[in-house]
Length: 158
Image (cartoon, rainbow, N blue to C red; front, top):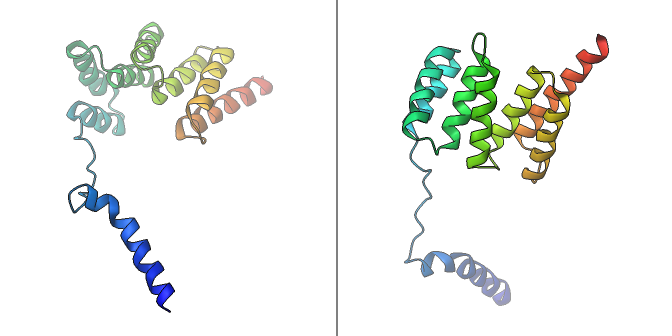
């Protein structure tokens, strides 16, 4: 009984040691503050208001051209809108990836843009990149894999 009690006390002490070493208590980790530009753009995207999403992200890209998220969201809103300029789409996704080569959303969305343009091989290149970026299958990998499979199934039917 004494040994069991000693083991229990040791386990509690060991588990609490990092908190004591940090000054007695561990404060809960807080998420970084939300980006109001991204929140506004995502709200417009949720409403499928592609024009507003484009306006918001175009301005954000102009003010902060080094932000990969802004480039990716701008390209996404163009791609989803009416009569997308695929040159603009590719330019902004590639800029997002130049800034952050591991940007999972830009990798996925660029692969989807290549499917829109009929370039299955390039879409598969981005799927392979996502496969390397995601230790376990991530949402972006899963979504692009499905888009590639759907594209291939449509090609077989033609």
